Length: 350
Image 1 (spheres, rainbow, N blue to C red):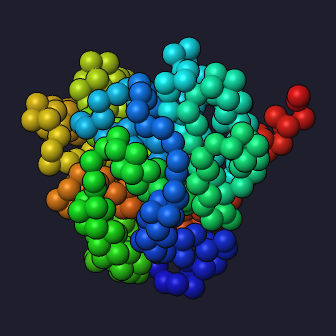
Image 2 (cartoon, rainbow, N blue to C red):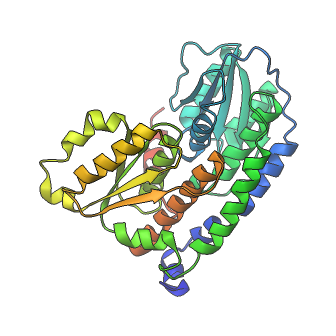
């Protein structure tokens, strides 16, 4: 694969966005440090992040990453409405990269009516208008990117804000390791040689196949979601997935009847050294069972020491895998015409 063939397909230059992700993380950290969010942190009983798609994944990652530390419930809400428990003791984080996400703006207005404590993060749009009007804390991030390519802006300013509010411990050591690892991987994943580029090699293994992603429930469920979403949006290919141990109690039985179809599937086990010991045993047995139905089974291990680095090592790899899938499928990874069509049709109905 050479730069000329990549440029011919990647007309909107998603390549540069992925290559520049470590720089985006650096900028996002600076935004978080300078956000100056003034918010009463005492008495917060729960946190609800409202968002969809690429704007919600930052909230999902916060939930997964902080699950072992946060002492209050943390929920990601992908709906027009809010759970009934939301009120003055709830921190509602409104995350809409464009600022015009229909469902998120509806939830935003409901949060205002319920007098919740609101923090907004966006580049523009109705989200900013509502925040300025209500004088609620607002973190402004640079616009102009596909939301799925703005994960650094969606995650790191919020992490630093929760740190500054005293809701979580200082994470500077893990952040530093994560940024260093991403910088190294940016060089590796831009290589045109699959022998030295794990992302390209993996994309070649799974091209023109339905991808099934399995991971542990704890910590890496969001990483799993990210892989499937990126393969769909960037690679323009279907991807499904599940988490263990739940998958062992239902989906595993489905690997039986559709023999021809199963042979054409590519199964990825997203692994981490800190997965529960019993889950690691389950993954080994599950791989053996599924391997009887398809020969395309691959384990993909996280890298790094701290949890944050290990999570982002897999996320960044998955982003690049989905990118190279798009190139191999001869599909421009950036456009999402069918989503734009859906929004246009929804806009005709008021």
